[in-house]
Every structure is written in structure tokens, then in C-alpha cells.
Image (tube, rainbow, N blue to C red; front, side):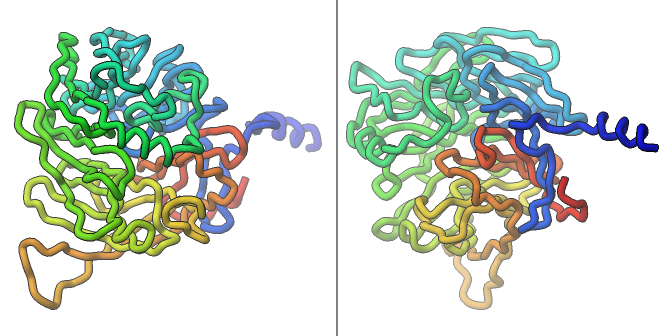
Length: 417
């Protein structure tokens, strides 16, 4: 019997001494947390990037040596791309990952390994997003020889490859506020362009002296592109929409008070709604706001100060939201905001006057999923729901090095491992 017990202990998988635990139940929330990745410096993608393969079965993440995919059911890992690359998006139609390498855009099929160079970037250009049918990429470039602002991060920086590949940290720069002010004030001339995935043809579709950033194609409409005027949020009209087929950009939200800010925008899975963080005014009153691109209807869901999150996300059916919280140094200055949150939206019944232009108000009812008090928030967790809506994926340095974790939406009755 003693020999049998020893044998059983030997076959139980255990993490290496310097690795975080593989699984545990958060004692403060009752939710099960699992570590999805083994590589130090591995990171899930930026919150509004598509980080799942077209079949919904695999998570795409970056490592110090490229791009890998994790089978969410079998928990098996396969490296899709090796070397110094910058992730753009996972495709929604094909089993591809799109990325930049040595000044050019590429795609690789995660099943077959087939790789194709799409085309070279314009000078001083970058690409941020792939459209719904994978026929176009979109990005920006700076015209002329104006200052590069080396401290300024490229479009969708948090979504990029790990620090070892890009020569900078995944963490937010300490002087980000100053950099944002200087880059915004520079008014460098920029172009917004598309690149044809089949031919590599580059076409400039918009020019502006505003700092253009955070490009994000609709997940369902191949010609609908969202982008932002980047800079200090209290000085810009941030969110814009335009068609790649032509026409002028359309502003999505207009300021109604001094110091009103909004941003960190993202699409609903059906492509009908734009969601964004709204503060009226900055750092005082907090909302998760929405705009319907067809009806132009608006909904604002209220949050408490501690519930404000750097990034939010939504399930594919639109019924649940998640947020990654924030530490006291963030805009909300939350005293107890270092949590991964689950939110259930609740609209407030209208018992008064009705108006087509009225905002429909609501509240987000919060539930805490993960205690993030050991997490250093210079690394943003960047939450997303798995396609089956059962888990919230995030990246964290709570154990020192950065890994990808997931927390189960349903409460667990299991004991901590």
C-alpha cells in the first residue's frame, strides 16, 4: 500500500518550483482560476483584438518566441509562428493568424502551417486590424519626417508581441501621460490605409492631422472600420466610424461637459453595437456606454468607482460583461478595485417621458471573479470571454512573470489545489 501511494504521487502533474500554480479556487470569490500557458512572458491579446481561431476552439497568444495557439478543450499547445513578429489578429473566416515581420504583413494557417507574405508596409506605417471576411487589413502611417516619438507606442500596442520581440516592455510606460500630450500636440500628418490580403495593394482612404489609432474592423461588416483620435481623452473627440469604400468619417460620441472622456471602444460580436468606457466627468462618474450603428440608439450602464475597469468586454450573446479592474493609480483612483469582474446588465424601466434621442440608462450588477491585489497594473490584464462564454481569459504578473490565466464564470465547489 505504501509503495502504491508513492507511485500515485509520482504521476500527479506538478508545476515547476518557479512556476505559478496550475489551478486554484480564489478564496475571496469562490471561482476557479487556471493557468493556461507555461511560457514566461506569454500574453493574451489586447482586449478588443480577436484572440480566438475561426472555429472558436483555440486561444491565440504571444510568447517570447512567436505566436502559439492553445486548444481550449484538450489544453494542447502548438506554435503557429516562430521568431520576432507582431500579432495583428486571428482571422474570423479562416484558421489564420495575421502578423507583421520585418516591415511586411503575413498570414499563417494554424492547422497546415502554410504562410503567405501579403505585402510591404508603407514607410513609417503599421497595421492594426483584419476585416470580417479577411479581404482587407487596415493601418496608419505618418507622413514626412516629423518626430517619431519613440516613447509613443504603435497602434494597438498592448496587442503586440512580447517585450523580447519588440525591444520594449508589455508594461505601460511610466511617462505615458507626457508622451500622449506631446504626440497629440504635434499634429503629425497621417494616412489611414487598407491593404488587400490577396494582392498586397495599399490604398489610402483617409488623411488627417489628428493622431489616428485603435483601428478596429467590424466583426461582421467587411467595409466598416472604427478608429480613434488618440491623445489625452479630455482633449479629443475619440471614436469615429467610416466605410473603406468611401465617404467621410462619422463621430460616434459628442462631449456635453468639460472633462467628459470616453474610449477603449470595442464591438459587440454581432457588429451592431459599439461599447466604450464613458466618464462624466473624468474620474468622477462611470458608465459603460453603447451606440447602435443602425438605429443610433444609446444605452449607458452605470458603475461604482471600485468597479471601473481599464478594459471591458462582452459575451457573444451580449448578456454578460467583464472588466479587469484597476489600482489606485488609475483614473478612477479606486480604493478596492483590483479584481477581475463579471457584470450583469440591468436596464432601468422608463416610467416617465420617452424620446428618440434619450439615452436608455441602466446599471451593471457586479460579481468579483479574481482577487488581483498581487497584480502590478502597469501590465493591463485585457479580459476576454472564451467563445463558449464559460471562462474569462486575462494575462497577469501576480506571480512575478507574465502568464495567461482564465477564471470560470460559474462558481466552483472544488477545493484549491
